[in-house]
Length: 232
Length: 267
Image (cartoon, rainbow over all chains, first blue to last red; front, side, top):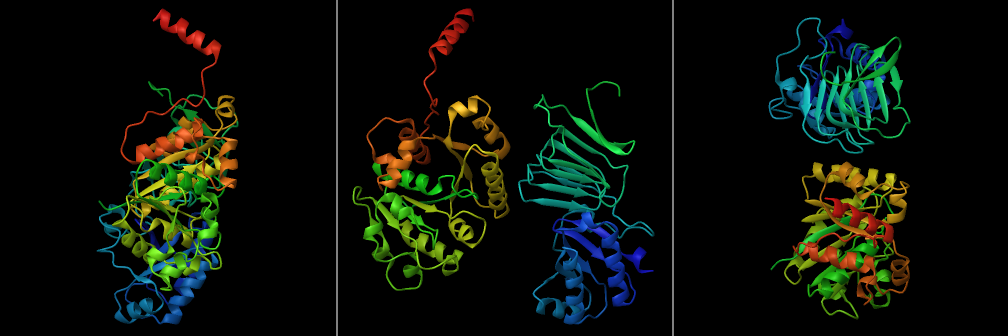
């Protein structure tokens, strides 16, 4: 059925969503249900839609775009193996997404399709730069940032988030519902910290000497534990 | 030698971009450089007022772009320095009258005749900013030591990095050394640490800047020895490649000197 057939992968330009083989309107309903299940993960994101070999009209693609826009998701590209669909995509001013020359080389975009029943690609994403105000990083799996996450920037990951640097912006781990996700940083002083459905703010104390910390959900709330080295 | 194009921008308004652009252009011209300063804030022009050249404008940037005059006719020569020119913005139009490629064409034609082309960018991240950024060889990011201005500067740096333009260098403007010391404003080190780009200047807050600006006689012209005036000239020298040390923004107090003396005696 539709819901299980939809797969989500992280690519350099955002997310690549692959629809199942079913009827178009059924697949769109499944997509909407999928977004509705974890809205905060998708909100504000950009999506490339892989529609497979089906032939679609401009109207049908526009339908998908409107549906996504209703959930504050931008449809920027469509991947298809059908020439009719490709023409319609271009007529709408969208990008024809070709995996071979976009977003590569990037392991999470290029690897083989996820295995049966596995919804997310398991590869993590490594970002080697500082995320500045207004920049947003979304990935269905784990994210490693080598650099800082500045105030006004956000990282939203389906899995864990590790920052080799300072976190001062917003980080959301386990955004697809995984309460076991963790957030680690060399200096954890975020505007807001989220894990699955939990939200926490940094304590409003005086700035102390930065200590590496790991945040996780313990007993129904987010707890940050400092790392002091040695045996844990 | 062809000119370098420097865009002065900030994201947030009111941090002192226009005043800084005017003073840097004056300082460069006083140091013998052929400088043009372009007002890219179409519809809200005020660089001409800051420079005291308002009543000499005949044509403007939009006239050049739309072919109503030649570039040379629109350049306003400064009344004090023969090597300083202003290319004014149109006041009766808006940002949509200029496209990034227009700005690039204008800058290309100015390159031969000058050493420095400064572009005073409008606030914001929209079309006006895009136009000011397009022809830039280097970018000067202006911020104050307040949280909102630093956040906007960070956003701008992110956009510049995404466009693969730059290098971008930082000017911290209107700093109040006393307030920083009392912990009421971000310190220079905090701002540089967060934005992590090279610092090229720090300008202290000084009421004389405002008075001079209102008279159309930028402070960089004056002969006084204020810290702000020296800061403008130091930035101009650094832009020309000189290695100018950063000045201390105030004289150490008597008891601080005493402590330093005691400490150095101990070492």
